[in-house]
Length: 526
Image (cartoon, rainbow, N blue to C red; front, side, top):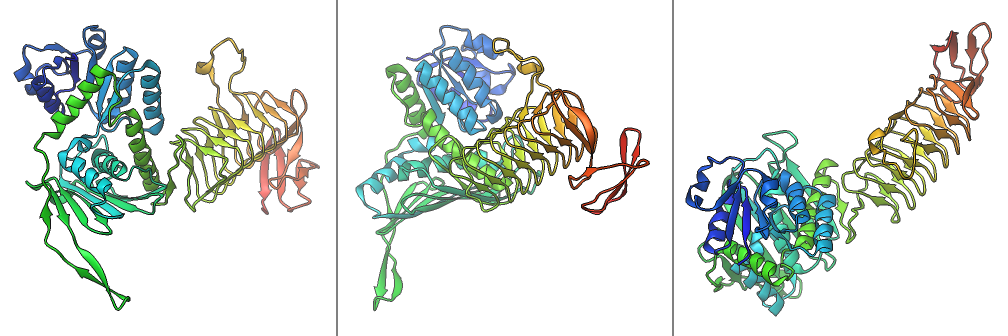
């Protein structure tokens, strides 16, 4: 028997403890609170309060993680790195990027990684899958599910991440396809930013649509999944004793024009009697023993995670649609902004309404681009770069961590931003990244280089090919190698010529005064 440790003895962990004990596989427990009453039946089982100490125990072959969702990624990663097979409760992680990393580690180390999508092991779902494959329902037209309850309320994860993974996993398995689009709507009624109720719709390549309604603000508990087929309908009701029902309703057309429902009595579908959790954990132990890929392996968990991430993104951009692609990168099909089909947008990147991102550009995770920006061809932004509204970044520009562009900044073609002052290829200096700030309305000329750690003042202008190593004043014009100030510019970009400390722009007629090294606006016409 595979010697397994259960991590977490809380609300769900106590169930894993019971089943692994029944299977004879419970070898150790990791629980930060040694006084947890759920530990009382397992006094003879070795208890760890330190996770690394547990992983260092060479006798432990596998770990089952039932800790809070926010810890899943780090704990699963550590376990895989220690050479343990891993069962982790849903969700696999909280971002698709983290999930992909776990899958890659497991694949490279040839470790078992399994996600706790328990409904896949429910006898009713297994039977429903068989019915669809056998054509009992005809062509599947539509699938919808309701997973509703009053409580248990959570603050560390919203209802989408808490309830929806089960139904997403089942729907993917029933259709054996991934959706082409995901749209989510929701409400955060108890805690702002933590959704209590969401409705997620998915559309699949074969035309099938589905929706998943989840809420923990519902007057009673309901767990139903309904499959509508051309020949019959099936209902999986997990709150019912019988669990699975077949409704062989027919639709007839009177005179070929009017559809009329011909209702039929429902039939209870016979299923095997088995506990889904025990079936699931037996499957995990069998896969660990025989080195077989689990039904709900890391790849399946990642597919579910991508959809959760897409739904979450859709909620954040005011209920717009996020297209899901087979690649690890999700590209937006939302009408709120445009992304060329050759560009890549990482999960976690934020893009404002009206922004356009052109050919072969890549927006890395953690980056934020404001409204109505234009990102040219072959531009790399991020990770963790902030760009304001109405900015223009021309072709072949790379903006690295530490760069901040305020509103209305123009970056000319092939201009360069550094983020380390003394770079060496053979010296790791990621902790030495320095911040570069380009203030509102500034212009950076083509092929200019901005050495990190400086501030370019508002409406300043950096000449083409300049190498800027020090701060640039507001409205200043700099040029040369190294860059030196050669004049002043109006907000509109026209050079100013001062006489007796006063200048009037010939283009927009704005007026300025010069007080030592500071521009004072007298009259602004733009």
